Length: 279
Image (cartoon, rainbow, N blue to C red; front, side, top):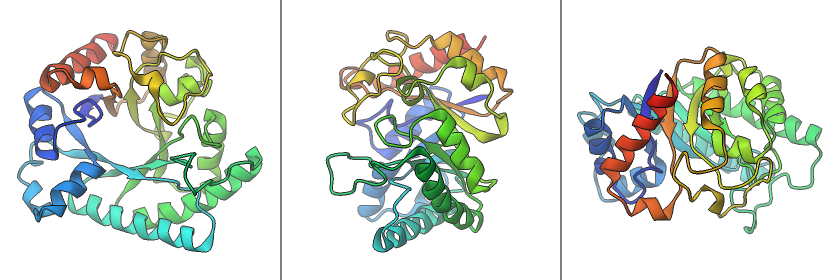
């Protein structure tokens, strides 16, 4: 088990600041934030310039490829093109994993994804896309962890696992994200039964919302210090550990209130709390 810094803890910092905070607070790796990386590159800096900074702090994951169930021809081709681009970037940074998001990421947007489809259709169509995504990843030594957003049609843990099974790609797994799974009605008992080889990482966070309520795109139910919400965190941590998973964990904090605090202290305190719960 090791803990990587996730950029939702240090939202307002730039990429280099995130790397520095991760090192100075004792994290074993970092999840690279896609928008922060794009900002860095847009100013003329190169991927190669990050190599010495990541020498002692490996990039363990990168976010994200969104709306992965796109079906219309133009949308589907755009998905594959975006997948290729992010995999090329991940490979150059020696980053082994890329995050996948179910959609629509923005329910109010033009793209509506598979809204209205049956569970069987959701699984079948998404699995087809995961097959293509997985094959692209293999060309670049990249694995993918799927995060099923709780407000999207494909959000139930059992459907996600069935979809991954149907895709038959050994480089596609899941992230056990506490907030999305709690809000989607998953239980600790279900989590404890997941095949450990399907768990690629864990996002440790809390929720203000009751179990199974399904939070919205605005994610206001995440505006809480981890440990101050409704998720029985110790029970869920123990459930993950019961699977035998011993990989990457990271803390998330989608809270405008706590983003205003010292990000060094926030990163350190959340890491310490997670370590405490794993004893």
